[in-house]
Amino acid sequence: MEQGMIVKMYEKSADGSLNEIDERLWSPAMIGALEHVNYIVIQDREYEAVEGRLNIDAQILELLLVPIRNQ
Image (cartoon, rainbow, N blue to C red; front, side):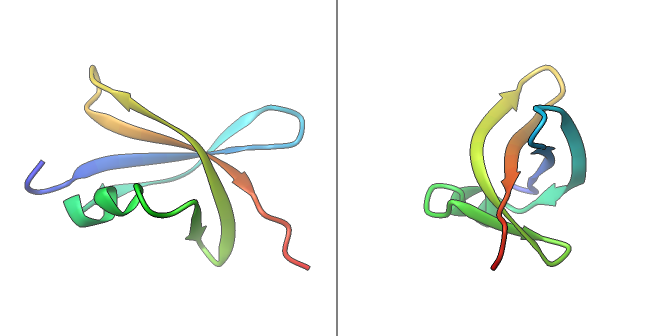
């Protein structure tokens, strides 16, 4: 993982459906930061990271995100 890993992010909507919202290469430092963060900002929208899954077959880290409603 010296060069990083592909991370796919899925948004879980209120009705329970999943939509892929982002896929990109993350550096080892960004992946390590997941141990310390609960919230992620993508395209100026804030999400709470609620679950992660390492897909060994595809060699991809998948994150389940829930949108945060900003007041």
